[in-house]
Amino acid sequence: MEALIINSQLTAQQYQNINIHFMWLRVRWILAIAIVFLLICFFSVPAAQRGDSVLLWAAGIFFVYVPLFPVLSYFKSGKEYKKNTSMGEKKEYVFNDENIQINGETTNMTMDWKHVNKVKERSKDFIILAFNNKSMICLPKSNFNANELSAFKGIIKDKGVKNDLKP
Image (cartoon, rainbow, N blue to C red; front, side):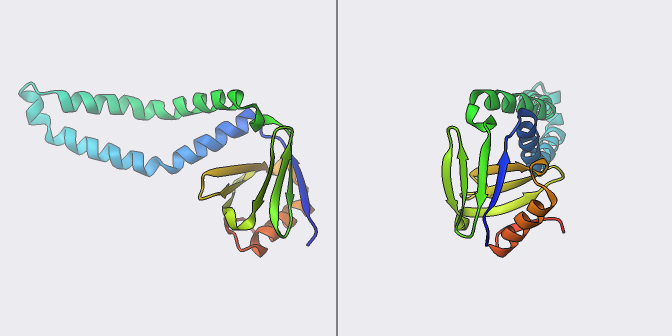
């Protein structure tokens, strides 16, 4: 197989969108916790009438925090992007039979295919999750031409990496 070379640069907006995407994956946990708090509030109404409002106060804080969480995450990811300058540098990704090579100004890394856990295809990018989902590579689709896009999907399928690639 011939090596596929992709040049890419992650923007702050793309990084923030990825962080929001992963935050919404956790939304079912947030909803489960919200339901638990609603049940606690429902069953603590008699306690609140006696003047014991600790649970209602905690539930109130929770219901203020939950709507603010996406906003706080968005701004926090922007600060992280500015703080870590290597995220925004231009990088060259080389996909071959043995591994993935990542070369940039401050980044030189080789990652074996066995460490790649999953490849997610979204409308504007690919997300490569590696090292037990502790490391992430984002490749915007705008950096691929049609041939490179089909070659990339073929490499992922040939390597047997778990994926949710669109046909």
